[in-house]
Length: 204
Image (spheres, rainbow, N blue to C red):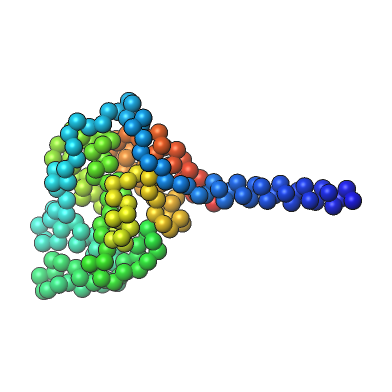
């Protein structure tokens, strides 16, 4: 009888621990709080996308940043709009946010992992135009993604939005931090909490 009771207790304990682990992996989005700006005031100058030159043709070969990323990440040779080879129309791209595969260039967006507007609010307000251009076209901060996922994300931080595909959370957190450290952008407290949770998914 004692053995049965002991086994029952052990089973209950394991069930509780399992439930805790599942809850730990479920990271709920949280809205940004103005309290996060106590030490870092909200920028006086509003964000304007026109101030961030993006999709530039840095090497003047007629292929801008978007086209070059599409070419570099396609799983098969891309097809161009015409013989000039300036604009990609098809290829094969894996969307890491959703796990979906796309063959039409018009179905994918180029996402800034750390969004331009987020950077503006977290330390980039006074950057020069050249600094903003470098950030906006940095391949390390760019991903080919599902256009719907990109629109859903908008300019949100990890505590406000995460990729639907949970298996990408670990890499997403790493890349987010890499870019913020590279450009010395500051973190909000809520953002830090979520990034720590994402780091824990790397151990699973």
